[in-house]
Every structure is written in structure tokens, then in C-alpha cells.
Image (cartoon, rainbow, N blue to C red; front, side, top):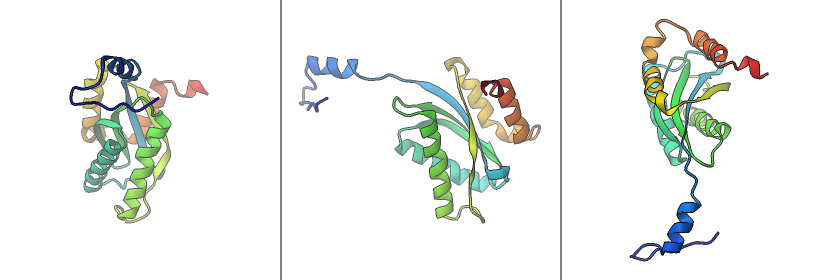
Length: 165
């Protein structure tokens, strides 16, 4: 693969063809959820606000598109879109790992901040984006009725993760 310089008139037709036939067009929506270590309720409203802002900025720098982000005292939800060269595991490492590093660097919480090792990730159909977005944005109301542990167990059951075994 070489480098191509564009003139003020743009790329030649041959170069345009090469560029556009060798691009990957990928749009994989994911709903990802992860919790704090031991599900400790350390994510106060003010901490969540700072954390969401930082996660968004960090993701943008790493070319990870986060559509929406929200959570509750012990976990976070994101609706995100994978880019062409990023795996789910790498994306989660970049989001979770860097957020914990940053939170500890600025002493965001009184004690050492840690995420649980596990996370939940499922693909989302284009037709379900609005529904998932609404679910994520209504976490405060949702968790008046159900705990994160109950929610997590429901995800595991509904998406048959135990059957993958």
C-alpha cells in the first residue's frame, strides 16, 4: 500500500477507485454493560457525570463512537458502534481500563477505583437502536424497580450466555 497525494483537484479517478474499493464499511452496534468491582455503589451522581464525560472524550480519541452512556451507582451501560479494526475485547479494555486508571490518577473516589473483570456485550439491530438508547437513558428509573444483580442475571438468562459454556 502506498501513499497518495491529492492535488487541489482531488485524487485521480484510478486513485479514487482504489481508495473506495479498499475501505471497510462497518457498523456494528453494541450494548455493553459493566460493573464496579464487587458491585460497590461508588458511582454517585457527580462521579458518574465526570466519568461519563471522560469515557466519551477518551473513546472519541480512540475512534470509538459512543452514542449514549448512563448507569447507576454500581454499573455503566453504553450504546456504541465498533470501528472496522477494533474487537469487542480491545474496545472494552480501552474504555474500562483507561477510565479506572484516570479515576485513580485524579482520586475520583475515596478509595482505589476498580471495575469488575466481566462485562456484558450484545449486538443491537439497527431497528432496536432507539429502544436500547431509551433503556440506557432511563437507568435511574429502571433501578428503582430492579437491582443491577437482578438485571445482570436477567441479561445472562435472556441472551443464553450460560448455554455457551
